[in-house]
Image 1: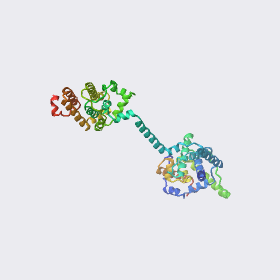
Image 2: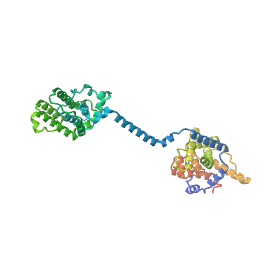
Image 3: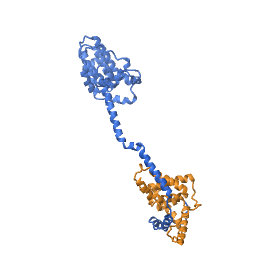
Image 4: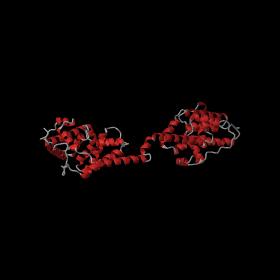
Length: 281
Length: 165
């Protein structure tokens, strides 16, 4: 508090003052009676206010007016963005088609993200008698670039297809979608075609592991582990076992042995069925 | 504009006296007076009725006075040139002389108060603000305002003891 004080403050004095009964208040009112703002101040202040209001009226809409309309603007922006995103999805036929249909060509790409689920499904679909079609080339090196950045930055159609396929549904959904897309069966005599297909499928099974080791960012490692433990994996393992049995039934024992070895690598925690034990040994 | 003019006519004299007694300088008072009303006009769209207009007006005036004190580093010395206060015209010459003398003493005593105490007194007398509103305008608590007013009144009473029983 400012100033020394020689008298004890008087609450009664304060009460009287606050209620306007204090002699100081009366004296002050008397003193103030003759004092008022100079008339020139009236002109200056009122003129300034008039000018300010007129200028404000003549000014274009201010920031405050924008503030009043910010919610409609925000809503319109959200609608425009949503519509354009939807339009982009609908109008991008390659990405859209590849994302929705896991064809044999797209299978390797599909396994990039969902290897255990999608690849065996595709395998199951194509393990029917070999399709009548051009020999399928083995996956090109560009499909699995050494660097994940290269894969992501590649503007080619294949890279785009890979990304689209990576977004494809997983597990049974992918398998269900892949089944109708499988081409019609072909006579088993087409050895060349079958060999190419085998190569493709092997690459498809190995590709995820390669990519996981090379390219999977640490942030996705946990997600990949979870995917491995998903129930879809069980169906894929069973499908693969069925395929191995068919190979065995067709007398292609060496291929079946190899497939079983791959199967054991992929699902090491699963027991080998009894009827295939001899192949495992 | 009409609403502003109504407010202006209602508050202009008390505000002007508050600034005059706070600044102790008529020129500075006139300048601050215009500044305060200019602030009122500029802030008219952003003002929200969370407090009385009077409280808001005197808050603006207080802030302007604080700026003035900072600029001038005004000491709490008494006025060197006291304002001459004319008495009302209807008073008799003797009464007018006595009252003028009393007013002058009151103003002199008020001018001797520390500006915090003087301001609390003026906000109550000119602005008609309550203790809480004075605290709100000056940025201090209610008890601080009470304390300032007690000291100010004690000083005034001491100096005007012959007319203040």
